[in-house]
Image 1: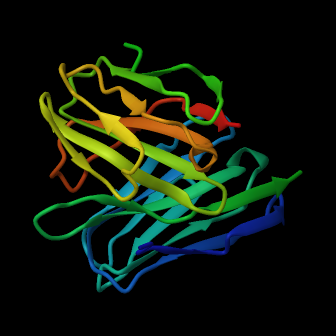
Image 2: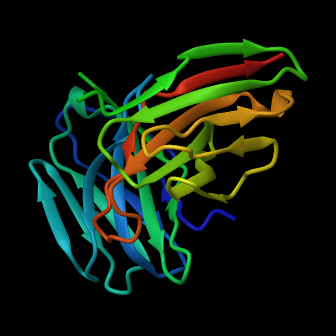
Length: 112
Length: 115
């Protein structure tokens, strides 16, 4: 069962545009992570958010964790071709057997 | 410090063949896991280990075996390959399974095709 829904699945924009990627669930997570994956490589961690309502910034990337810890968003300002890649959100489930559950990903292409 | 290494990078098998995907990490991480990545499906957990001698099943364990005899190595065995196992396989490790800030370090992946 896929607990995390990411949208959009594909996004193609021009350099300089802004964009937002969403990660939604009906489940509460202990924490939520965002990874970026480039072709032929493994995912690399961008950020972890833990507290409901938390906002973290990484240069032009802004990450937000929903107040109820069920959803998150990634906003990129003035996208650049180097931002191209697959963006994955991953939630750490609660309970006695914590697991990291991944969304299906958003494939972003930034055209020069 | 090589991080997480995986071999082979590419593999083609015939239906029914068996093979082992190798994974090693040199960061002394306790937690290791195997994922498969299929188009439109994201990353799905196959098996994981919280330490040497301890393994458990993930979301899609059927057709795969694992063992963890050392902290460093976590091989994934395909017992009798099937076309449905065509995928890209990623091994990952992390220092603490129960930390909220637990970062997973991924290997470069093994692209497997089963004919």
